[in-house]
View (tube, one colour):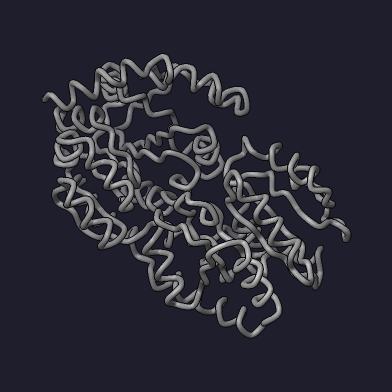
Length: 417
């Protein structure tokens, strides 16, 4: 196929850039310099059990996969779950969530030789790719080797669909080789079908099935007791450029709450700390482990895996990635603990989830820094409305559960025991 030949030529030409990218990322995250051989199909981990393989790129996908992995471990006790990642933070999250109950490795880059090594080494009986992992060589080789491969919890924004459409015949041919596509929403399913997906069904979003960990709920309550009656505004999963805008909005508030800023990417923790220093605010870093001081104005959440605790603590939460044209981050974790949510104008990566949350009364949307300031001011001053949003968020979250059960039924069809 000419399209895949051109694709392979391109990824070979990009190989030097790929190696340089690893080295560059490794400057701030040492994990990128570890297990490099795995990215080219060389593995030390072995298993004597039949393998079910699930790919979860990073932290969000790994956490979303938790209810499904728990279900797979229960339904297929004689199998080994091999969990693959792209990022070190995804791998670390897998370690925290599953320990030695799964084998975790990096997915190889999509070079045919590397993918063949991966498949030869682990010999998976079933492959599950989370969300939007459309790798032409990986999927083609699984198809050639008769490995049932499913794209699950699949989502595809309108913007991403337009980009994929520009790749010509490559994406339709790749999607057609999947055994099944389990889409999150009707819109996702329609876009995947338009790109050439076959056997597409709507399964819902696995993230709604993730129960908030009890230890994180307890941690959030502990923080709340330390802080007392003071209002808390959490700005979660913020992206580059947003923190300065959020600080601007916070400084415009008539009664300033404690502002907790949790950057999306750990390599930016020091960068945000430098910004806080530059802005002359009194701030603390979560990583120090100290109790929150009474005069602390901004709390920098420079720790991983504690978002549920921050949402439990918050009187109101802003979901990052949405104040700038970045497509937003997921608000489901916040809704699951009943946290009132504010989102920015850019939510194209989670358009249906965001619209449903707004319609249900669990979230409000703002357009800019000025309207963000106004929304937070009004919510903090209106306890009955916050309580209404709390109840709406819990109802909204509960009403969208069930994707795990539906996916397990599909998996059992594609890979009967």
